[in-house]
Image 1 (cartoon, one colour):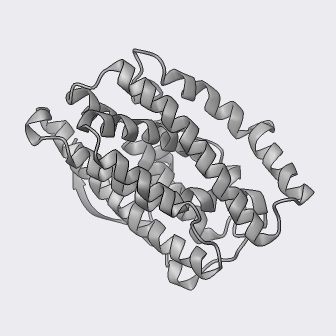
Image 2 (image 1 turned 30 degrees about the vertical axis):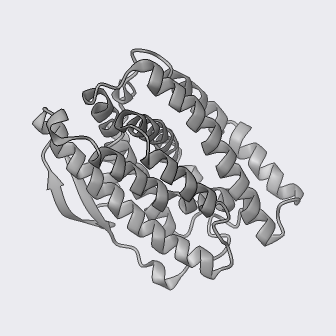
Length: 272
């Protein structure tokens, strides 16, 4: 069952510039991800809505699509508030014009191509979500409301990680298209994320600080670094037999729900 949840956080109170344990690199990286989410999540919603209703014959999948749209719309709304606070603090989304052009280009593609792009980006959000939930130390020293926000987002990305993929298959999407768009998206996603991270660090005067790059090295190549956590699931996507739930990590979602039952309010749900 996909449940749309209203998060009990008040971003109007603001948050500090280095909200993630005073760590400039980790804060800038997470902020860069947030900046891209509203446009990206609207693109995901539009791509599944573009599928003719008669294409999705499975009633359970049709119900999951509704829940997927509800969850992504909720994420978009919260990250718009988040990004408004970043803008108030002097952090512009430098790559927004470029991202809007790409989204406009994607909207003119065939439905299967739009879904393939969404599947690729959803795989990246699912991998990062798994990392955040599996490694609570990543957010342990974050300000409480942002720790809740990011872990909530990770939990719901885990919950709906297969929906776009299943819609893609229902729409007749094949292996070659899925993988070719994934390779393209992989390059664009990481280049954009690191470029925006660098812009954020430059605004803080931390881009060339030794401690910034020491933190980046630990975050990516330390004992529980992102690089080691992402490489295997990233390569798994290339398999012709890939499906998101081959990596069944629903226990992470359940654990978050049990530990954070006061952090949200269910506003609607759809049976799967």
